[in-house]
Image (tube, rainbow, N blue to C red; front, side, top):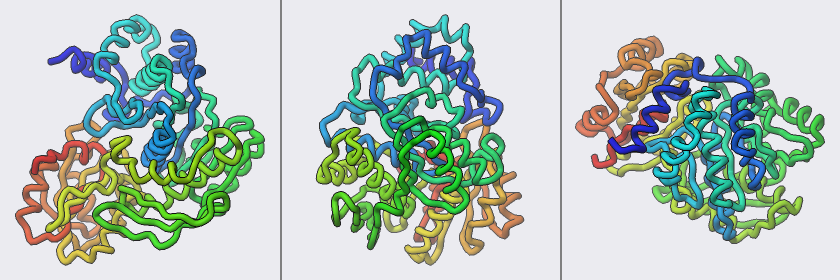
Length: 430
């Protein structure tokens, strides 16, 4: 075992880790991160940042924005969570993951601080990212919230501008059981006199955002009012869009990501770019915005979003795991008009299982499985819950066994979804 693996295993073992423990690992409040930051000289104050929150789409939007700034020639830090394959995916500069030796050196240097503060795993990774971006002297850092916004550890930054992607049902046990309550938590990233862009204008949440923006004297814009997206065309290579804006007129965009939900994400990012440019915060040029979107996969290595592994049969994986995410994934599957659809499904136990299961088609074949994660719902329990919704299928020990079995059937479309952790365990050598 390498020293890096020893350090990561130690952090997993010693610190509360949300992706393994769920709610009990969540530490509300900013006390720990403020303490850590103060001990390190407030590294987040050294670099300019942009802050992104939302239920779905914040990861994709963060990567799109990072790629756009890279195309403008900037040195761009990107902090996102969770990771798919390797911990180092969480902290990147111009698409390059943080060096494993730097993680080890940081741990060795600040282990006494770790012992005295006892932060959560997420708090520790946030302060690592801030320190790394400071040391590497990034021009800008794109910071994605982990959970919520108001009490999220990332919320000690003072960004140039903020983006909230959308509001859906997720983590209700922590954020609240209504869209209004969830929106109020996400709105916590809105800062005094700091521009805020909202990707999706939703009836239930518009008043929450408007009230918070008014209170903070924060210029607010709604992407759907400013940017119109027309004629989306989906292909194995991604998605093509016609776009209409007030600043840049009419133009076309090619995205390497083909998920239907990316239409809203791109509308939000383009509207945000327009806002940031028009307010003189960062000068942005349309050709470089287009290039940033088109080169996002190359520039930032975003994975797990409508990821096509093969055709004939189609094998597609998506990390969608909540109601709004699954709804759009299934809508896109139906556009392929599969004759025999197999869905490989694994979920975590602390989700609104019934709310999500009610969306799935009853005429598909199912293979229920689980990720190697303490939060994963046992496959037999998931099968039992799914049966109550008329979803019938078999069990597989893991996702790769499920894929092998599905490929041995007559299925012309195989969808793997329900959990980030499930998609992370796909062996791409199949």
